[in-house]
Length: 491
Image (cartoon, rainbow, N blue to C red):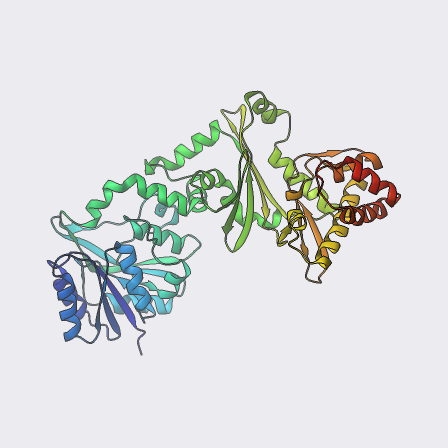
């Protein structure tokens, strides 16, 4: 038996053309099809026409919803669809007999094909063939060569989360990018099976007025795709995007270092300036620096964007001193080698303006799985067992840090992450590592660095002092007294 195809027809004020569109769909000879008409809050007779066709034809279903735009209408119809395959059809266009049989055959025989496209011609206010170039991802990054009317699998619609409902124009372009950017082929039919109507109110004509909003939305949704295809964002002058991006990188040289196991996300990290400029992800912290949680390809990252320094330091960081992002990355790797917990270092990115001045920089790590910070100890949000285990683990970790000849100059409550591993052992991870200093650390300096910015009760301090002293081979009572004396934030 042939697989079921669900034809979804979003319709807004379409009474003039809808009957002709539905007649053409009914005349399409494919045996297993359903037609779902979604009336998108029309103010004319569209709903009445759809309901009348549904009463007379068992394969037609009419849905009514408040006006929400073509994306909401398509998503609503597809969510109700029972078919293996989906074919969106605009309410003023015509599908000719034979397309569905050809398209389903292609999709069934070639799983690598994700979209089957009907060759098309214009009719109405403009006539003649619709010349669309052969599909390529690089060209798709600059223009849409796939009509909205094309067959695809419902599972792909589900995978990408449907049509992006915030986009009110060229929504099919965004949808095809989302579906195809990670692989898949597009097959175009050998003969004309789509007649695309052109008239004054046609969406293709109206969409041109929203050019800038469309491009900005595409850059926000798919920055890594445009980085991979165009070397940077899609520009408002789309055809010049690759050249404009190449010139930008010549004047603003950039550097990216990515840990070997994360190389597949390289283009995502190169797109970090666009990602931060378009305010993607979840803000974790935003003051002088900004920290965001970002998702890509099923992985969760934490990215710190460092504040651009003053003019003198921009010259210094441009040539003489490693950037804070680079130091964060390198120091995290160094701590790992010494068995000191840190969120897994992933990458760092930096950029210079006009080849001279240090500009933007970003440090990327994996999102830590540890759910607490030292603040949870201060706020008494932990059980007595957790508190004691974490305080002891903090003492041991600090001892290992100082034994390795490293001092964390911002050793404060928010920079200590706490939790347990899979075996239930207490774990500590250190963050904000660009301010490490390297030298031999004696007991006095170590106790001062440890205690100065960590408030604690006497009992809490004693637990940390005993673990720290044991790790370093010092007298526990002496460490405890030094830590008490140096603390500036009494609990």
